[in-house]
Image 1 (tube, rainbow, N blue to C red):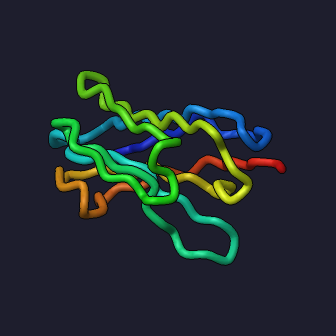
Image 2: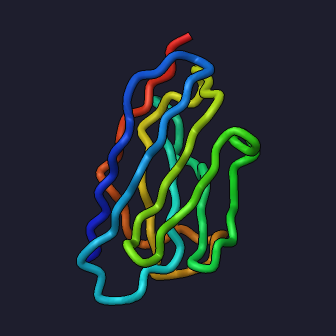
Length: 120
C-alpha cells in the first residue's frame, strides 16, 4: 500500500510563502504522477498542480504564476512552492500520486492532508 506523507502547511499572512512536501513510500510499483489538490470548507476538492515523472506539469488557472510544483524522482518526493499567497488559498492540501503518469488524471493514492491558512 502506497503511503503519502505531507509536511509544510501552516499559517501565513497574505503575500507570504509556504513550501509543501510529500514523500511517497511502500510503493510496489514506479510512482507515476504526483500532485496536489485542495479542499476549502464547503467546497469540492480541486486540482492545484500535478507533475509527471518526466516533468510535464498541469496547474489550476488560479495558481499559475504563483505556485511551482517540482519533484525528486530518486526520493519519490513532490514539492509545492507557494508564493504570493491569498486568503482564498486557504484549504486542506492533499498529496496525490499515481500509478498513472498522465497529469490530467488523478492518481489512486492520497495523503492525509495538511492545513494551509492565509490570513488577510
